[in-house]
Image (cartoon, rainbow, N blue to C red):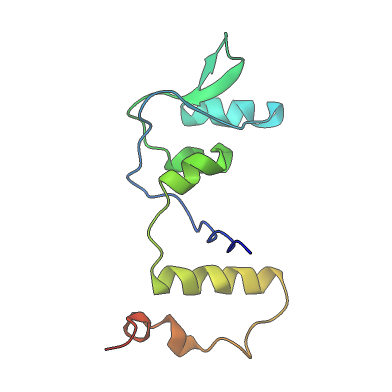
Length: 111
């Protein structure tokens, strides 16, 4: 049985396009992508991020392969924040997660 891949909590704020990074942008979102700085590739019929541009503002439309390549490092504080966010949209996790678990010192592993 293959282990599931770790969830992506976000893209690094410093990640930049290293060429034309194509987007998975719907027709409904094309104006938002264009406003964010995306360009249209007429021959490929796709929106893309030009080389050297920070990818963070295009995170919504980036393919999973690009997200995984430029994923932000997961820190205990970020993981706690994401779990809190998820708990607001799903069943309560309060009985499983204590606020002390958001303390980075408890995430350092065995000493």
